[in-house]
Image (cartoon, rainbow, N blue to C red; front, side, top):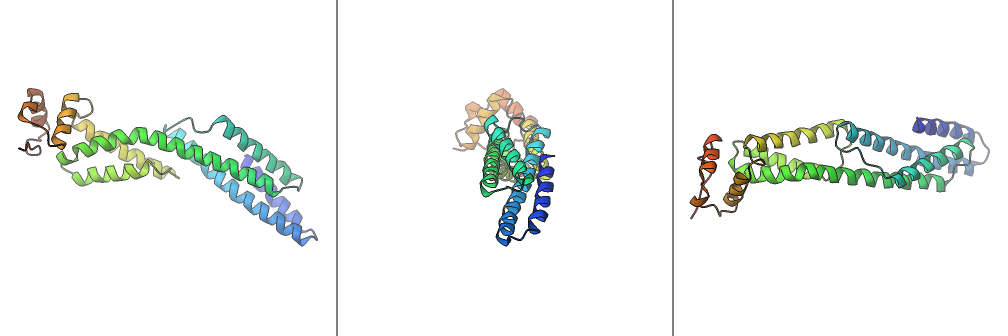
Length: 222
């Protein structure tokens, strides 16, 4: 609503100033209004991302009180100055800076929460990929999540893809009862580091190997 009002006011003042005789004033206002419209478009996109992060249950805490207050103040100031034909570069710059701060908080929130979800999955799938039938899929999951956690999504499609890959990663891990079994986790770590010995083949580990059809996948080396 606030953004729509700002755009409407911007169009009104642009028409009014265009009718003035002072060409320099017209050009000055046109520049400020153009920058204002760019800023409001960027803000709309950021607000959309924040809403998506909330709806997809990624994170519900994105914006700090300080950034929120600075943003509201900048929006109100631009709205008032647009309405009374006094919009200036300083007001538009203040809004631009507030939006930059908001973008920083959105990016930080995403990276923090995405890393919490992705890092354990990446590490576990990486440990297991040599045992999987579809090693290519495991590598694709590792590669995608590694990139996704560092890049804030811009659409519902991006978020859905992220959630799809994290879910598939969990399915792979859960399918081999990896994370929930400490003994198995230690054994796989030793195998990956080529430190596993016959002594590590406990009845529980042998049962796990047989139940997951991994007898031909795991190799002990001298």
